[in-house]
Image (cartoon, rainbow, N blue to C red; front, side):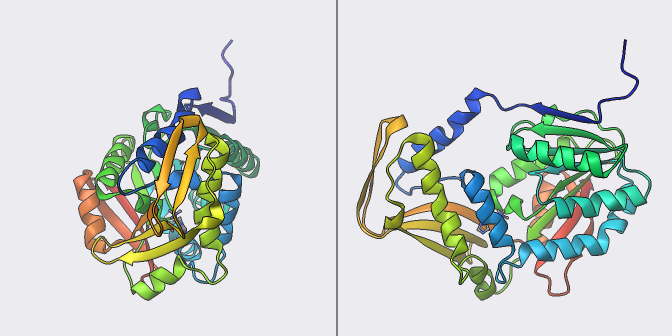
Length: 328
Ligand code: AVJ
């Protein structure tokens, strides 16, 4: 017999054993290049996620609290403009931001489904349970997946869909992969769907650089943590203390770049890959780019993905923007 009610909470996983290979692949690719590089997604093990949460509380790091204020001020309008019945959240961020949007949709009387998408199964289960409990009658359809590859696995929309991609995470993507990702989001917006995109804005380099060189040194710990991840996961022997944190604003590219610089020449072995890597003294390994946007760039990137901006919300100092977009 068919159940009368859909299960309130459902979590599906699209990450298989193969996905563990990505760290190994990225390390092999990234550490054998002339300009060494590791993608920022590997920062976020349990300790890295804790450190990131601590970054969000730092006085210099304005992004998280600014975005939250913008959402609080405009969530009702976002709910009204979109008429969204479901919220898809990419990289399910902090519960507080999600709640602001869900509350507005509930108040508008449209809220039916919440779909958190994250690579961390723990995160997806936690937010799924949390919101199923807090919002009686809400159907929760979690997806443990990589939003760069698995968006097509989302359930069919129940009605107008709102896809939230917040926190400025889009900034981690280089211009080409950024447009590719936006295009793949466009494909799953569904009829009447909207994208809610959080982006940090171009501003005085002094302010930007302070946000990535905090005086408490938390960002430095966060950056260095990726070496602990590689040591643990791939049996590498990085001497973490032999590297130092570097972060600067590249004015031409309009992005913050984080690097780890070898204080002296280093020889590193990565057991799982049977790989030997040499660092010259002061050689740098790029660990993150965090793109900052002008309104024009944002418009162009969205247009390149077939989207147009419906509304743009910002704070009085224009530090951060939350843009609402739809297919053009
Ligand atoms: C989560 C990618 C938005 O780029 O500001 C914070 C990560 N890196 N401090 C950012 C981060 C260093 C953050 N994002």
